[in-house]
Amino acid sequence: MNSGYLDMVREPLQRLASDGPLEILLIGAAPGALDGLPVRRCDWTEAVEAAAIAEGSVGIMPLPDRPWERGKCGYKLIQYMACGLPVVASPVGGNAQLVEPDRNGLLAATPDDWYSALALLRREPARGWRLGLAGRAKIQAGYTIESAVARLVDLFAEIACAESEQVSARD
Image (cartoon, rainbow, N blue to C red):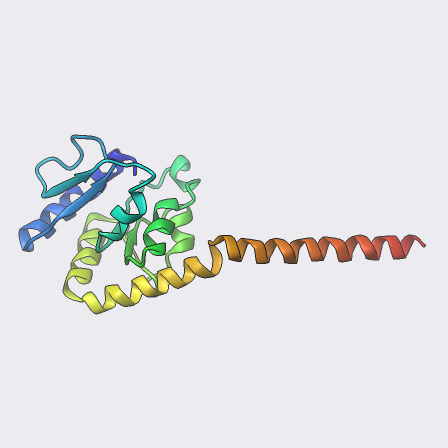
């Protein structure tokens, strides 16, 4: 995650930390990211990334609503959801396409939204579990090698049929 985006959630995380115990796991974030908050840092390596993500209890993806961020694909959300984590994300770019509010995650646009969403998941772990399972199901259905192969086979069959129809029409 781009560490600068974490500043968007600093205040909601401070509020959450004042409500009770909180540990924030940062994977590969810049050394000063979220200083002053209860942070545990993990260096990013490809070998440990999935296991580190799976240690979490909620995955977050804050993004400002700017042109560059609108073009992001939501890769972090895909990783979190694949690990079965409930997610909270800004409704920007790919995030808004991946997260179906209160079905497989939560969207947060303002600091109050972020605090409310994270506090809700803290208060209602069963809801987080349900969101995480639904998110994982969405990723398995549409973002795996197997699902991509099925779509490619369908696409190639469609192309082959269209080519065959064009050849038949010329004869």
